[in-house]
Amino acid sequence: MLTRGLAPMAVFALLVAVWEVYCRLSAVSALILPPPSGVVRALVLNWDEIGGHAIATALVAGFGFGLSVGFAFVLSVLLHAAPRVERALMPIFVASQTVPLVALAPLMILWFGFGLLPKVLLVILVTFLPILMSLLAGYAQTPRAFLDLLTSMGAGRWGLFRRAVLPCARESFLAGLRISGTYAIVATIFAEYAGARQGLGIYILAAKNSFRADLVLAAVVMSACLTLALLGLVRGIDRITARGPKERRDA
Image (tube, rainbow, N blue to C red; front, side, top):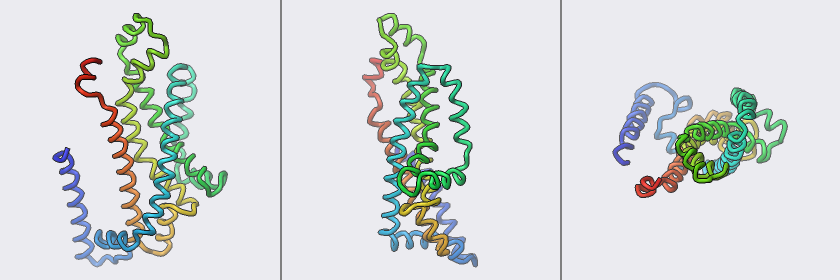
C-alpha cells in the first residue's frame, strides 16, 4: 500500500516544486499566482476561518451524499424489479445530469432560499445517478447459475435479490460511490457560491472579490482535502465489508 502511494506523492511533490520555483524566478505577481509556500502560509494564518467554512461545507456534503446513497439504492431496487419502468425513466435521469451546475445552483437558491435544502438537493441531483447506474450494472452481472441454483432450492424473489443479486453488485456499488464522492464537495461549493451564509463556496467568492488569490487557493486545497477524506471513508467501508479468504471460499 505504501509503495503504491509513493508514485503519486512523488509526482505531486514535483509539481509543487516546479510551481514554487517558477513563482520565485519569474516576475509574476503573488496577487496573480502565489507560490505554494504563500498558499500554505495563508491557510495557516486563516485556519480558524477557513476551517469553520470547511466544516459547514463538509456537513452539507456529507448529509446530501448520505441521502443520495439511500435514494439511489431504493430507486435501484424498484427499477430492478420493474425493467420497463427503468427503460422509461433512465433517459430522464441521464438528461438531468446535462444541466450545468452554474445554471442549476442559482435556480435552487431562487426556488428554495439560502438554507440547507437547496444545497442538499443539488448534491443529491449531482451524485445519485452514478450510484444508481453502478448498482443497476452490478445487478445485471449476477451469474445466471447463482439464480438457478437458489431458485431450485426454493428461494423467492427477495431471497434471490438478497443472497445473489445484491452481493454481486458490491464492487460496482463501491465504484459508483467513489465517482459520486468526487462530485459531492464540488456540488456543495457551487451551491454555496451561488448563495449561502457559510461554507467554502461563499469564502472563495469573498476572497476573489478581495483579490486574494492565496486565500482562494487555500480554500481550494481545503476542498480537495475534504474530497480525499470522503474517498478515504469509501475505501474504509470497502475494507470493512470485504470478505476474508474463508468467506470467499465458502461463497
